[in-house]
Length: 172
Image (cartoon, rainbow, N blue to C red):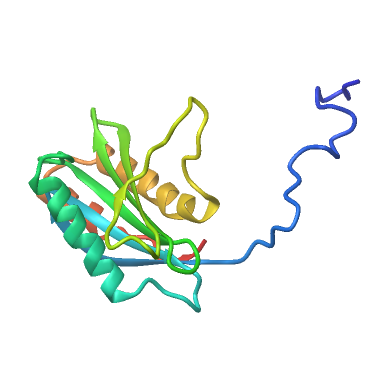
């Protein structure tokens, strides 16, 4: 039976995540990087007591440079952003997003586990799959707004510099 709002009268069976305890993370901007002819902002996301290690960020940046140098990832002339997300312990996502077709965000997802020497492409099977977690969405929402401001601008070099400087920092 549904209520007057169209929702089920009993919603107790929905959205239950037994044993999960949510905690805050921090989004920390890093200097932009060039990769494969693209220019990308960089964000680290991690628990405030377990930041992304400099060595892991350097490994991710070398990996991204190699992916673009081989042509497996083409970013020629694109603006975008990267999220390096330490998901706990030694598991990291490397989310590479670029703006294409004027107003679309395209993404390639890589991951690294503790037992892997490097990042690798994350296979995403099935029609309904994970996209972003709540912590990543803090940076993504900021980037959506920042790129929207860029699209309304003259899109000249000055506007590109404003976009590149417009970084999110804070809680997620």
